[in-house]
Figure 1: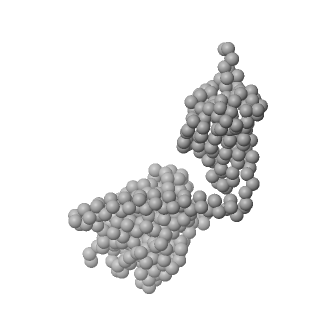
Figure 2: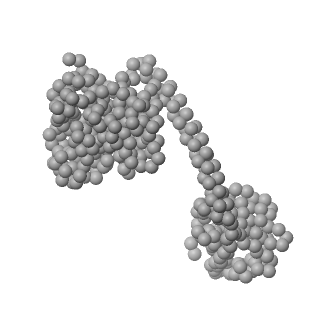
Figure 3: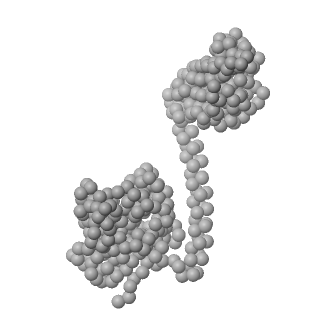
Length: 376
């Protein structure tokens, strides 16, 4: 018979001669041994319900299908199985607090499986008391996680400060920052002297933030954004420009006049609004990839799921060059020109255009790494 595997989700806590505590699956379980009985107690970590089972010398053999004869031997047998001291034993706990005990005994040359169950009985408790315990437990967990986030944030900021001081001294810091007064700026941690944002909003969904300065009218300018961290499976990163009329909205890439690079899948350019269907992806928004090729004025062919092409993977550099003399915007992926789109002259004359970034997953992070205004 195949050797029993080590129990899953077991975290031993404490072991005395007559007391043992362990996290078993989703339960905080204790074994307490006295001269009269073995007491098994368990608290469900998800709903704070309590369970227990008292086993006496008279009931040990019946409960364990004859494998154990005393409470002391059952106590030690359960501990050995949980700690994996006995390779041919496994203990687990079901959602309704039933201990499943799988042992394998050797009789002569034969190995015989022996299985028994110990059903723990729920201790009836006041619903308000259960709710209060759960609230206290969740509050402690939140406090612990908050402290860990504070420590990590402090370390990140400390390292970034050192790096940016060196960059500032060497003249490497780009003259562009994210605007902390943007309508959705509270959804981001702004660091690196305003050049880096990290999404900190609860849950998923696109959140956007603008640059502090608008792009200079009747000039050609460019900015570059580096993707520092992004969810590998989704990559909901949007980098683009839009008129100031959209600053009070939410999804800036959906508005009239906006042009955006999207890092999902194979990468895409969204021009004047959201992607509606595969046809509009190809004909209107210019998905980057497929059999039709890629280049200025070429929207490409079919949409591919090729994550190595122009998708917004970590380390990618997205450069956006805006020409407000000829009213067009060009996107570059790691210095490769991928798409040029025309801008509406009426919009560029009437509104200021701003760089913006939208992130969709908590902890996604990007940085401004370059900004340039070409001389006349």
